Image 1 (cartoon, rainbow, N blue to C red):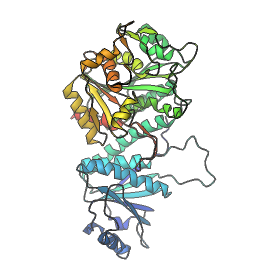
Image 2: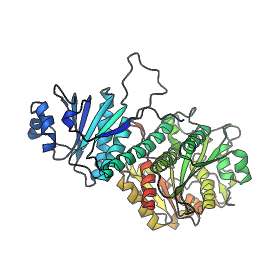
Image 3: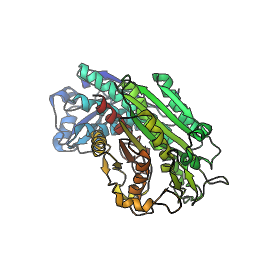
Image 4: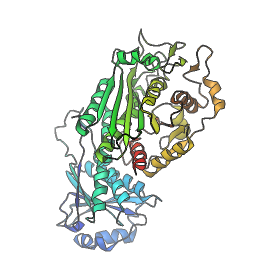
Length: 495
């Protein structure tokens, strides 16, 4: 079984929070924070400190606000007040607040914690809270030497619920989605010498073996037989075996599937068009689209959704070598298109070209790909919003709406035909980059060519899949995006 770092298990209780014998109790409160009768017994244990804190405005409930209070002689040893803010979508706010609460509890070396959101959360809101708690409690220290004074891992989170069937289902779903994020983030954080194309294939096989999915892995020879010259052009510079991974979940009989596609460049040097050395270590995250697909498949299988889903991953590394592709080379993709390679650092789209064409064999009702594709998207949208492009307006809107519901906002960029001039090739049919101007859009137009008649949407997650700075609720590193978007999109299709 593929390890997932330290991932807390989720339990539930209907007990009054004042009776909980836990190292940390997190109370997630909105803005403006105020006392409610449900906290009276807890307030009594603190000698009225909780009520005084709220009355004085020492804690207001604004987003990311945290205040630590000492507990009483019995009950919770420490009380964390965590602000959810005044967001219009409370579920999204609770997901973030839950992650922050669990992260702070973990930093306190708490082995267990309890959490309660006030006012009472709906099923959707409770699911989001649990997802956040799981994300914030996840840690990955597997590649670190254990310290002499080993830290206590957050092993269990108890959520205070009302005992209803809806609450039980929400907690179970939140834990499943949190596990999907953990699966993705674990793959993301691995360095390129560990997270290889073969490791991604093993991760897919692990999901398949635990959940009864079908898994197919193609290597160089099989891809040559399929004439995947675009994909293999990227792989020809590395001794590692490239992998095209297909993971099939069947929850709806013979119904046409949704296909999720992920770019899996396990390390990207840029190839012959080599990147600057500064910050190149972050290019281990160039497989984040693949991680997002595999994490989503983990969650979808745990949720047992009544829908058919195929996860496709194109995995290789982009290396400079004596056998690597050169700028100016022309290769032929599996759909027959001749591609002029202007810049070898625009390699992800070369891989996705053949994977998108391969997706057509499944006759999907929708195909959504995710890739850390362009630096231009970071300039355009920053590190909060991912770019969205597609050939089906209704499908684009559907995917954006799914992302918004889980706190993974996207913004549509226009695939207007005028920009196609930038990727026309004098030597071949199409070239793999159109220059700096509208760089994310021309990359999307390149992929659109290979998607053909597929109902298709592309997510450019270069700015959101990982963070080079601390995100408050999550540490710097992999965010797991777009696991939530993928899962929510598929769930909506299953309803």
